[in-house]
Image (cartoon, rainbow, N blue to C red):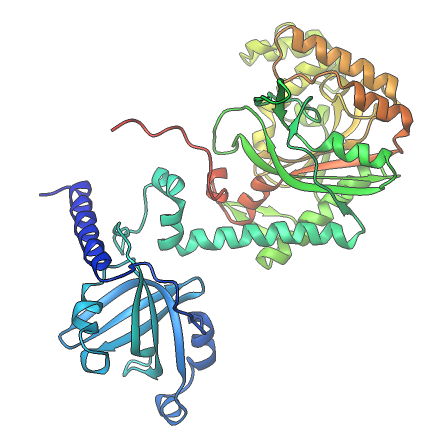
Length: 500
């Protein structure tokens, strides 16, 4: 028995031979057919009409799309043509077409070929709206067979690598990316209605800043300097606030030189938004309102089922400090222990967290949170009270400068958003940059660079403000019940295919 690859190779060879024959008789890729109708529009407008009504008032239509089925019955045949809106049936008769078209063109079609059809609408005996073909054109010869009808494209890796085939045969995939587009539009609309200005900041930067992350490095040959793909839009947005804009956002791509997983892609979409004269509590409220409103707009409900769990954006989000959360899932610790380096280190050691050695209390608290709490936060939950040493751009709390006015939002066991009252004290920011630069010199590839220009911008005066950053891809995962970030990226990064 032949395997699938051998069978596919034979089909490709046969299709190439057909293309060669087509070339001999003219241009096999014409671009002079013009359609005037789409499948879904025709079905909506005429699908409920009886055949007698269609015969009494004939509707001539011109459609184009990909041949998805074909059933030949001697001198006549039924087929389905698919455009972006959906499928519609066509009916071709040998004697109703110009001489030779039925036998030499239509009967030699392959599933996947792109065709142009003109004809008159009618209803079959089973009540299916159909185009009675009067003119038929082959527009594009498909050289590869589509996946088998009933099993579709089931191999996950192939779906990601050849997304164009996945979209062709999987309605569910097309719906995911329609919802993704609707989500991005709704996020923009939410902020636009509130008077925010959308900006575009450079993707290639001399100093990457705005987040603790390992950057990608490239080289500009004309200037003979290394440049970095940005890891966040934040510092550009805050420079705009210094310049006098008071509500600013950017929805665009960031790049972080990290691993690939179901939650991470090195190139991802981030919405960052800042507003003057508000604080992180105002921004928790704004973020909650935004996610609730957009979820309802895109899916019709703010209460979603995600991988068997209920994610309810319609209810008030949970709120707790990092210390409270760590103590809840580590009963041996008290809130007082959460500032005690020795107590936190003992807990980390007991849990087998070797990275706990040599860290500050704040770093240990974050480690314990990430390792023992984060994955358990299924319902939307704001975590506040982040230590200052792990929050280099956040304003310190007035009553406890070891902690910051910062939040992160978690849902479905992962971070969705990060925000804080922004640090606008230039001397404090300069010192934190120096601390970050020192950590980088010691080997921390995710530590920030010292950004002298940003410090200078703060010296001109950054108004009190708060900012937030939403991981759009992870949010879309929840809205579409997608288990992997690759399911919501049209063209995710993949490891190179192994050589044949």
